[in-house]
Each structure stands twice: as structure tokens, then as C-alpha cells.
Image (tube, rainbow, N blue to C red; front, side, top):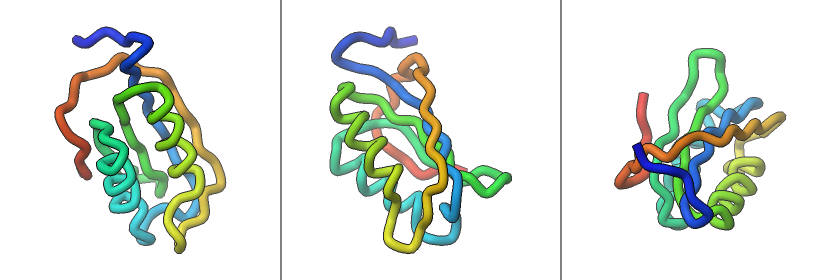
Amino acid sequence: MAVQSENHVARRFEVFGRVQGVGFRYFAHQTASALDLCGWVRNRPDGSVEAWAEGPPAVIEQFRAALSRGPRMSRVDRLEQFPVSPASYDAFRVTN
């Protein structure tokens, strides 16, 4: 397991609101890929979206800010962020 360092951190995000059926996962994937982050994003049964991202802290913060806005048709009511140990993903993917 990779160890979190000052230059590489991982965060798990939970996003609540109108975040399913509005292209949120695609938005998160495009944003993370443009920022060169690794990890994944998926819908959760409770209607929220969960994402895991790994990369430099400043870039993770940019991703968090983008998730808090979401795509045009979404409405983000709440975003929670949790520090996690990096899992060394090699790309950013949409998962089930």
C-alpha cells in the first residue's frame, strides 16, 4: 500500500444533492483526467455520488472545488471529504 506524503495524498468524497442523472460522474471523470488525478467515481444506492482521488494536495483541492459546484444541471447540497491512504491507481475511472 502506498504511503501518503506531502506530494501525494488521497481523498474520498461523498457528494449529496441532485447528483445522479445529471452527468455528474462524467463531469468528475473529465475534471479528474484534466487535472491528471487517479482514482474513481461511482453512484451510490442512496442517490449520492462517491469519488476517490489521488494526487498533489493543491490539485486535490481543485478537484474538491469542482465537485462542490458540479455540472450545470446538478445541485450540490453537501460535499464531505475524508483523508484515506493512497491505493496507487493508475488512471481515473467511472465504476459501478
